Amino acid sequence: MKTILYEHPLNERIRNYLKLEQLFVQAENCFSYNSSDQTNVSQSIFFNALFAIIDTLERSDIRGDLIKELEKLEQNLVVWSKIPDVDTSALDDNLHQTVKLIAKLKGTSPTWWQLKEDKFLASLKQRFAIQGGNSSFDLPQLQFWLHRTEKELSEDIKRWLALLSQIRNALDLVLKFIRQRAEFVSISTDSGFYQDNGENLVLLRIRLPQDAQYYPTVSGNKFRYSIRFMLPCEKNGRRYSNHSTEFELAKC
Image (cartoon, rainbow, N blue to C red; front, side, top):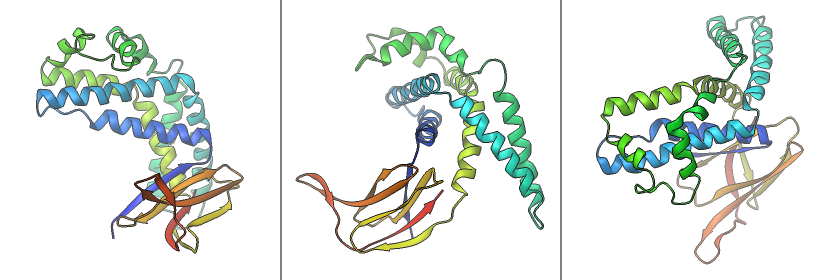
């Protein structure tokens, strides 16, 4: 059965992680060279995502948070290695990757900072910050860049994204282990409303059938959370569902 996965962070740190993860997906997958029109559409998505990543990293100490997460993970992996019948091969691979990422992130200067010093990107970022400011007549340098060869465009994009690879790889590893903390459990509620204790939780993962006519909205924090299921409504945009609801929940 096909499903839809909804995720909701229960603190600001995880919120930033999920935001960055989505921005990385956009930046890495949006660019297309099928036609000049498609390239023009994709470049807007790419640069908006890239600049949002830079702004998020600049506003928050993501690198410091990831280092702390990885150091905790390293300690846990060492403990898990002493458990009988553990998959030592997979554990060793993750431990090696964790130690390597910690060493890279603790470098004297974050590599992504070079993106802020890139004169071409800086000239674009200033205009992209203005609503509608990325029009072709405002950015002739972007028009010139877009009409370079596919190879040249690809090399520039790969170079820019490579400067973010340390953050990207650390983020992937941390989120992988956060998501693996809990398995999905089937839950049924009579009223379209569910609440529970949020102590020690950082992320909620809600899975619904793709053909379900409702969707979840979540509010809460590390102490308590609630899930309210909603129905589309042409008049008000959405309305509360008061029907019995079945869903799967993983509390990470």
